[in-house]
Length: 419
Image 1: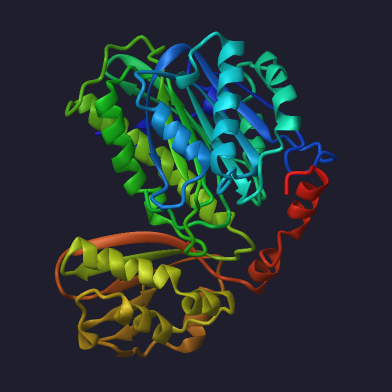
Image 2 (image 1 turned 60 degrees about the vertical axis):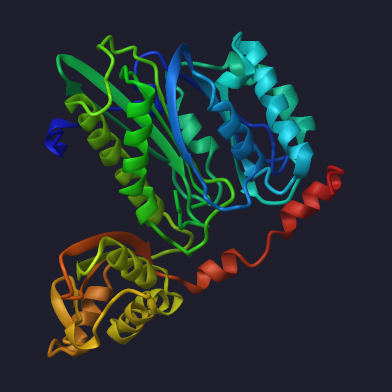
């Protein structure tokens, strides 16, 4: 088993693994006068084994559709991503724009178009300003280097207030393996696979079926267990590229080495997932919701997600109010098998509700706990042995103010002649 103690944090982000290069530039996608980085490229000269998960929203952005089709190819060597525009609900034109971007980058790199994954994040419904993006693509390729991982993490940010990246190393057999990641997401987060993107690189040598299984299991234990506002994006994507540059023999499915890769991916993705919640749009609390004693895993999940997504519960947390009544009412409508008289609710280990009724812990004690920026809600249903854990946040008035209007983006689009 690969324990956290066996994992070493290193520098470099997605460029930490051997053989990976990256670049990020400003294309003025959302605003031509804004110099922020908004166009990024990740590349491995060595063809990679690739795996990924995508949004299960039935409305999928053009880059998601194109990338899912391209991922059926045997190898992937590059990821191109932009912020500022989601290229979602843009029809055939949006699909053509995604394909054309991949075509140009492929020609510059000397690889096949289908070896490129395309990702976008930003405003939904606006055509891509290709008149600014296309001329910048050769420059993006020219800027490729092994020290630009941090720039990519910055370039994919939208409403994020800080970059999210991590790199680790660990040993499999006799070989040291490196893995790096960057992610973005602060709002529209409730993945079911968040607007969220996560790119992971590794120099491990791994069979595709093993990697895909490991990615799916790691995503289920990380990104599928976070929520900020209960919304699922049209663009959610997690992509993992493995180029084998570590020199290790191939990792096969159902092997000890495959389990170690899954554990490393889960460790890394969970770090990324929690960082998304902590940087949620105008959030002030990071809350872990633990559900125990459920009759089934599905019941535990229903309860956890009902509480974590409740606007009433999240609003009370924002007001430092330990309102366990709102928590238990969410448990009740979760459609899980529960019995009111068996439900216990603890806040950082202090009983707030026992047997479905008010516990003796003073409200002042509970209020001091909920006033902290990090605490845990534990709900014990006393119905069985199934458990589930989800990570969530509070809901603030500032979140509403922040999301009231995207008018400025449409105003720029009209200037560009796109709408």
